[in-house]
Length: 145
Image 1 (tube, rainbow, N blue to C red):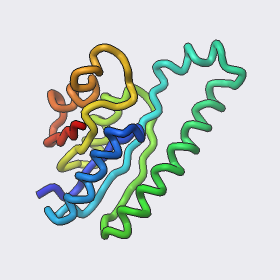
Image 2: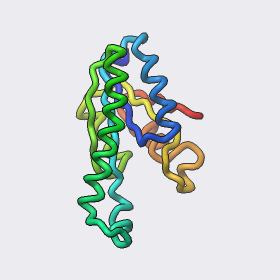
Image 3: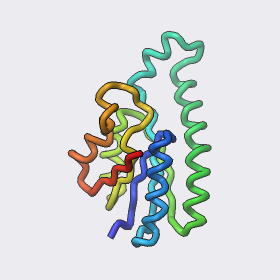
Image 4: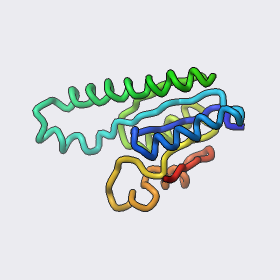
């Protein structure tokens, strides 16, 4: 039923919890996992005004760090028998998840209810997960605390 799962992660506690559900979906017939991390460039231009590094260097560092984390998850999921693809994208997380969902022809998105964002809309459900439930083409499993 859910053969290809997109698992967006920001490595938050909620995202790690959602990964537990991804693991369990192997018994339900899941075959492939797309590990997805989005580097949210929206706030980086403000950050670059105060940083001593160029924005491209900051993005490169974020990508290297994310890839290391994703490779740890990839290894674990491979051991469980999943085919795993790693994708690191840049942009608005909500829009990028929808784009990857379409490109990968995903049958399910598994996401934590809230990520690292601490803005007011994210307090209740999380702006990304809320919008995904409304706009995604495939089912979305939102994992709460």
